[in-house]
Length: 346
Image 1 (cartoon, helix red, strand yellow):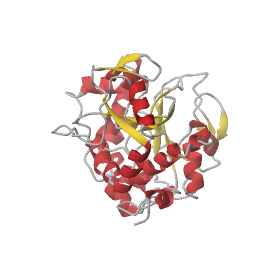
Image 2 (spheres, rainbow, N blue to C red):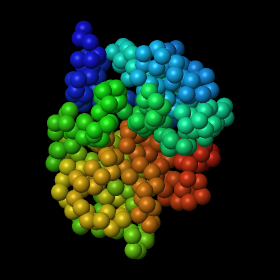
Image 3 (cartoon, rainbow, N blue to C red):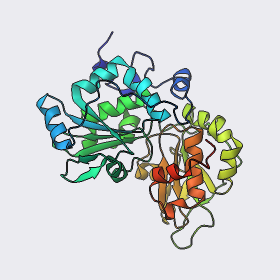
């Protein structure tokens, strides 16, 4: 078996097992093969996760003294199905586990815990407060710290193993110092962002021209922009799966929904009134995952984005949050969802 470094040279040739490189349809189907309802039993973390000392500066020093590049913080929930899938797929692959342990100590944080923890800036928070500070709306979320305690990259939500492996390589090799993750993926996997055809046509998408300007006049509805790409299997699974459910489409009918190919020269007037192509806008927004859904309020401010694998309950929760304008009184999405569990479709 070849070394993990061979498979991490480019994300398209990332892993020999079980999900390989650019990931064919069957591989992505496997990555999506889980239910995203709340788990009945609490998750057990891998035994190689580290317990925090309560001070991330001390955790980091221990990692560096042991020859590691730094630490990464795993923000999770004990009954999170996305977290379970991440642990069962990416973290269960021996090559990925080995690569992580060579370069990082992994510290787990429960986004609901009231235990105190000191960040590398010397400020003390509860684990819950730290998760809010870093905008971990979707679990699992990962924050990578370098050897001096600087936060160098955040990966939010669950991604298939080949993309998670690419993110590891991106951080370990310090590509973040010279390029966006989106550019790294596009360079390493030619054609990933530049497929013109094959978008899913849906009745709820508005037709061009795309004047999304809300800078001078507020919109009548919330706005959601779907950034997709051609020949995108994850996009196909989204539209044939959760976004083919009447409960989802009913929520989308309450919104202005726009679909853009992130590789196209389609002209768009953005919510803040700028005129540019879809390609330029996607680059400005730093989009690296398709599909990515970005939600804007009536005034054109970004409220939240889904830029990782999403299934029914998470998608429905975000749509409900936006349509109820819940962000006006509760900017923390996770806290709002906790208050809504008794009335959600779960």
